[in-house]
Image 1: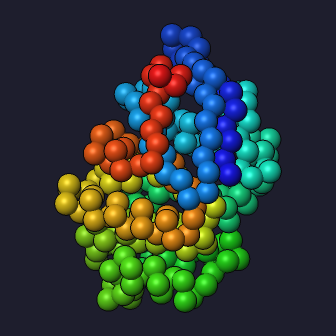
Image 2: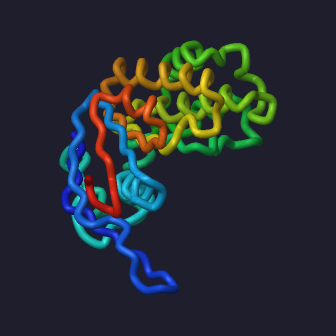
Length: 217
């Protein structure tokens, strides 16, 4: 479902070029979960952003099914993100002016794939049914992250990318949120690629890839 081939990425710095990714290749099947681990600066988030079309590689290919994301222009990558790729960040990135019900529906409506019944199911599974008419600022951090996850899954993406999705949560809340993510990934058969520093969370994924200095260790 996802094939990453020979990804290279270099940034210009005050000290000269810095190669953050140096020939990364990996694959992910539908319904499979993969943890991406490594020290800060090893290239984890950069790789995730390139796979999600949020950044571009200097070299290499990112194939989602038969679509080469790395070869698309800005509009093409945005279209893929709307419908086929869901991204969960450490920061919740909810829209403050929208009620929770509309935050959950936002991504799916942009993609033209809004299903009220599925959105209601996600809200129920995330324990948000009683919160739908509230605004993000009225919810706890754990509740806001559940909204962000529901919003990501509402369009039924083929691929879910998660960058430290429980990094702002306490240990107990993080475990509950992770349970929900994995349960829904199993049901929807999306692929899950998660960046995490947590060894406990990484151990819950089916596979793990460790990056060191821009390469797979």
